[in-house]
Image 1 (cartoon, rainbow, N blue to C red):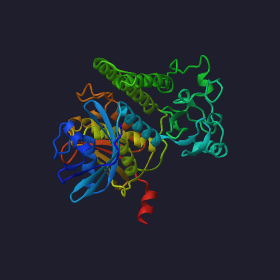
Image 2: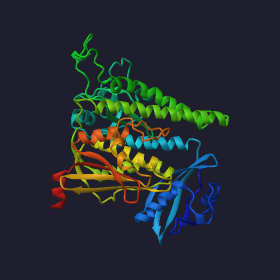
Image 3: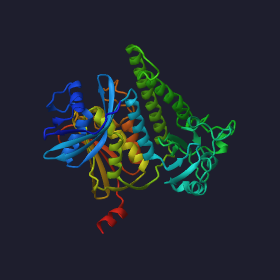
Image 4: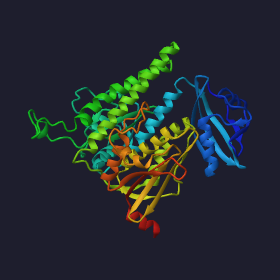
Amino acid sequence: MTAAGPIRARLDGADCLVEADETLAALQLRVGGSYPGPLAIPGLLALARRARVQQVPLDGLVTVADEAQPVSFRARVDPADGGTLIRITEWQLSADAWAAEERATDELLLRQVAEAHVVLDAEQRVISGMTEAADLEQFGQSLRTGFGRYWTDLVELPGNTYRQPLHWRLLDDAELEIPGSSRVWRARLIPLRAGGFELLLLADTVLARPTKAQTAPGAATSRGTDWKGLLGRTLAPALRLPMNRIVANAETIRSRLAGPLDAQYVAYAGDIAEAGRHLLGLVEDLADLETVEDEDFAPVPDHVDLADCARRAAGILGVRAQERGIVMVPPSIEATAPAIGEFRRVLQILLNLIGNAIRYAPEHSAVSIETGVEAGGTWVAVSDEGRGIALEEADKVFEKFERLGRSGDGGSGLGLYISRKLARAMGGELSVEQAKGGGARFVLSLPSDAEALSSAIG
């Protein structure tokens, strides 16, 4: 079901719903609010509050459980007369709304970290493409001259002997070798509404492949069998696909897409999906742990803008914040914080810090992200309004598998440990302190980009 036209509403300076079309007013009452009265739709409230505080127009996708039936819509919020004006479009009732929103968030993250973006037609032939990594220059040239060719002709699929092109689902998350690059790559294929696909190429989380001598039968190190890279290179890719299928199938059952189902089994399916996500996250954390603890691990330094990275990370996690009614306050669009680091690793750290803040902050509170430049260093800080971290626990929180007494929240106790290892590998530091109004304030500092700073001053 889709609403026929735009739905309009107005909030006052206290975020109370004072005017609304019938559709939104009815939803307000169904979710437990009053009309007129304080807006009771968490995602829309967070968006409106942020627009009012920052005095900027904002828009976003909002999803809310309406009497167990998910409702999703796109909201445009404009500051006006001390309050806000709301315009809602794309109002939909869909049993698949939650899953669709989660997929959209995952796809946004993939696009952020991908180092090659290729548009394919329905038969997986190249239409256009661009690359962002120096070792993909040869592949980029192949894209420019390969219009109309199957994209699989431009790469190598180790161990594959089937006639190309394969069905896209068999190629999604496939391991690749790209001429001109020594890194291991993965393909992610996203179907486009208008037909065709978006192909994203992502560098794997492991280091370069071992040499042929290292992988020769009977090859061993002085310590015996060489287990280096076993989890990240072998087990993680092997587990990722079946676990994703478990989650996807459980979500299909939970959302009753396959037909009517007793509520008890819907709950079981939800538990299976949540457990699958937890295990998948743990596998990824362990693979990252293996990577950062490798003595040969070294990030690739580049020119990055911590303010831009913070805005991207906040955008990726915006839906999760809306679900808990948390207002995200990222750096302003004009803010810049030039630093030296690896973009993908900086984004990984910020996603962990902001994700933790959203998870542990009280509902309907705020998560603030600030940046700054000081002598010799550039920093970005993530602050929440939670219970904070005691002084004696400040270093303990960065220890491996440390949960600080928290259990059952889906965390592995590895995120902050890995994040600090990454920060230090990039020549920086990750620390925690007490926020001004209580709560925790995590600060990532990296070497400043002197060249970019001097250009900005000049």
